[in-house]
Amino acid sequence: MTTTSRLIHRLRITHYVLRITYSLLTLSLLTAFLASCAPAATPAPTADINAASTQAMAIPSAAVTQTAQAPTAVPTEMPTPTPNIPRTPPALPLVYQSAILNPNDTPHTYIKDTCQYLQKKWDPNNSPPGTIAMAIMFHSITPNFSDLTSITPAQFNQLMQDLKDKGFATVTSEQLADFLEHNAKIPTRSVVLILDDRRPGTVSEVFFPILEQNNWTLTLAWPIGDGDNSTDNKPASNVLPGENFTTLWEQMEAYYSTGLLDVQSHGYIHNIPINNEVSQFYMHSELEKPIPILEQHFGKKPIAVIWPGGGFTQRATEIARAAGYRLGFTINPRGPVMFNWVPLQDFDDPRRPSYITDGTIGDPLMVLPRYWDTDAVIHLDEVIQIGQEAAAYAEANKATELAYYDIVCAPDYGPIPVATP
Image (cartoon, rainbow, N blue to C red):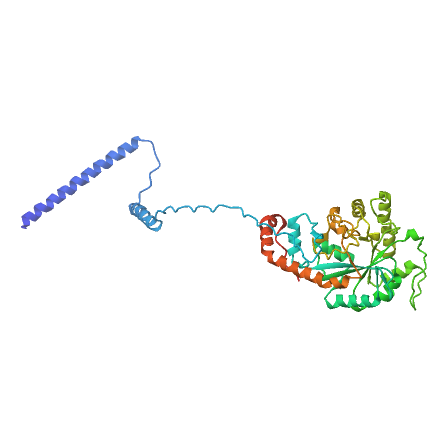
């Protein structure tokens, strides 16, 4: 480019700059003029071009980032709820039956609440199924047979030795009541030795050596004896050398203090058995009058009545219950007893006319059977076998009964308790 050309080019540029400058000055004057005509206003903040640019770029960037980090959730299929189908409880097994018993003597239950029964039956802190108890009735123990209620000292000693050898241990009336009512723990093979009538000499001379040797107890069926004119001042009976008792009550109180005796009621007059021919007044007297007298001499109320002469009636058992008795013993030798299991007879048996029908009473614990001392020894193995069979039967049906309890009972009664130390 020549010098002249360059000069012309520079002039043109200068001309353009002057024109732009003139235009800007004109625009500024016009703006100032308009501003002077308008009311004052708060000046708008000066825009930060760099910040606005950064923000404008951040918006789409954040949207892209958010889209990348949180993809649209794919809806999942809701699971179908499992229907709550009620479980059907299994049918409970029948009550254990023993072929050893007389066919007319059938087991009677007395706990009406099935759930309560199963809970107590399978509570590991209670007596295990198959725990069995037998009651044996004693009268005279004499070298010579005087009647069917007498046994010789040799027979007595043999019976005591067999009981020990076969694993039996004695329980009191209260222990038996706790077992029959609640399945409280007692020896698996238990026996209640019951000596009827007032026989302090037999207590001290015959029973005490056996009781002390084995740490056993003897239950006295003690009649007040008003019918034979006895009084509190009746002389002591069969006093042993070294004993200085003056009255019968003093003697029996001393024997009782050893802890080897369990004294229960055997009536007030005693010599007139209760039957449907006697008055209700007599029933009340026979059952209620002994209670405060026995409590006075032995410090506790009797909880068992040993029916005098074996006589009882439906009404008499009701009066006995109302008076506070928990057990009643007959002279019917039907068999042993277990928790919620008492063998009784529901009709008169002409082949056993002396056995009063007891199954129709409706209260098995008030008509418990007793073996006679004259033949109890030959029934010991039968009693043991019944207990073993009952234990095996219970074990075979344990799963069924526990399943029933879990379905029907546990919601209201809670689970079966666990064993405690």
